[in-house]
Length: 328
Image (cartoon, rainbow, N blue to C red; front, side):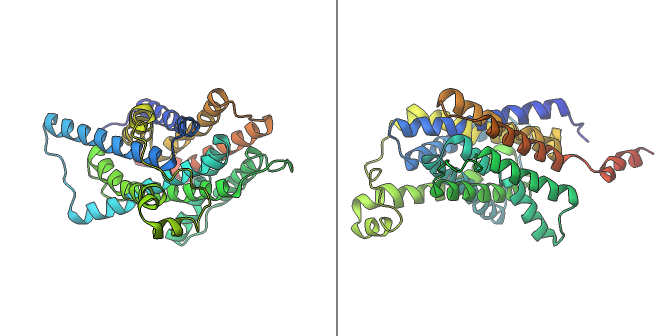
């Protein structure tokens, strides 16, 4: 049995989380340069698919052992699971159109307690006291991190809604990616899931930007959801060589690969704690590059959320006693 390298695992997960935390800042910068959500997500997924396809071909050509192939059922399941991957990016990027990156990432981190609820429903067991306390701390930290106690703050409900939708989709992605076709090589599995996510992204591109240009009926349907028609225009292909490469590398290629290498070594509990680095990195990037104002009370809220993640993932006494029992 292969021995775990915990330090290597922590390092890979930490780097992956930090890189992923930078993503929303670059998305916001793309918006400032006039690109649409459709163009941002499409460029990220198209170049991400191309990058993972190349990595798959290199791995297949250089490996000395035969790589596992997915069954047709596993392909369907992975593509279906991948739709939540596409949904997470799409919902998250829509959210940052309406609210600050620092608040959007806090809403995305609500997946911490969403996962507790999903786990309880699937196992039909109530969460233990420590998880309940962690959820309460996360909610308290969210109130502080979004500065809701300041009555003068104006949070666009559109951004809050899409941020919570991103958290729900991210929760689904975490559960499905850890349970479906775990025997497949990292690049191969990621490629199939990304293909599933692309279906969501390309559908949104047609519905929100390309379709309304050519079909009056679709435009009328689209205008039932929003009055904003500024982004109904021909696709701006310059997104591919301006922001697309960065978004693909930071969003769909590097972090998933590092997570898939790091988590098996670090373990799910420790890996989850280290991956929470995404939160402070994202807020710091927004503060430095976008000039977003982050108050002291918001930093206190972020620290509370990080503390709750650590508390939730610390091993219980029973889990600590298992290794000792195995040694005896």
